[in-house]
Image (tube, rainbow, N blue to C red; front, side):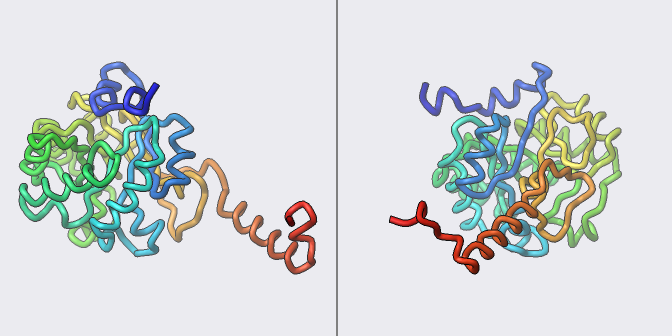
Length: 265
C-alpha cells in the first residue's frame, strides 16, 4: 500500500465527527519527532507556529516567518505516512488580502508534503477562508485565544464571550473550514460550539466536550521550554531523561569509560 492510500485525507478527517471518533493531534517541527509521532497513529500532526517559542526561543509566536514555517513543514511532511499534516499560517501571511493569502498558503502546499493550512480567526477571516477553499486549499480555522493577537487581547487569557465565539465558529464553518481549533475557552462553551457545528472541533484548553484534542509535543513529553500552560499534560519527563543521559555521557568521557573497545574500529 502506498503513502497516498494510507494517509488520512481531509474528507476522512472531517468525517470522524459524524462517525463519533475522537481525534488526536500533536505538534511536530522536525523529521525525527514527526516520524515518532506518526508511528503512534495519531490522526493529525500540526506544524504549529508555536515553533517560534518551543524551538526558536521567542516569547510569542509573532517572529516566525513564512519561510521558516515552510522549512519545518517540509521536514515534517517528508516523515509522515499516516496522519493528516496541517501547517500554521504565520502572522501576517493571511492578513494581506485574499490573493496574497492564497499565494502564501499555496506556497506551503507546493513546497511541502502537507495537506492543509490553519489560520487564526473566525468572522473577520471568513472571506480569506472562503478564498483559500475556493482555490482548493483546505483550511482549519482557529477560534478563541489567538496567540498571534496577544497584544490586542492583552495576553494569554481565557476567552469567555460565548456569543462571539459561537459566531466565529459558525462563520468559519460557513466559509468552508473543515475543522476548528478552539483554544482556551470555557469547557461549557466549547461543548455548545461542538454541538452547533457539523465540522470537528479540536480543543486545546477547551475541555473534553470537543471532537478532538491537540497538544504541543514538548508539553506532552515534559520538555521544559520555560512555561507550561494549565491545559497541558506531561505524559513523560524527557527533559530530565535528556539531562541525565548527557551528564552520564560527560562522566564516561571524563573517566575514560567511553569510548570503550566496542565503540572503536
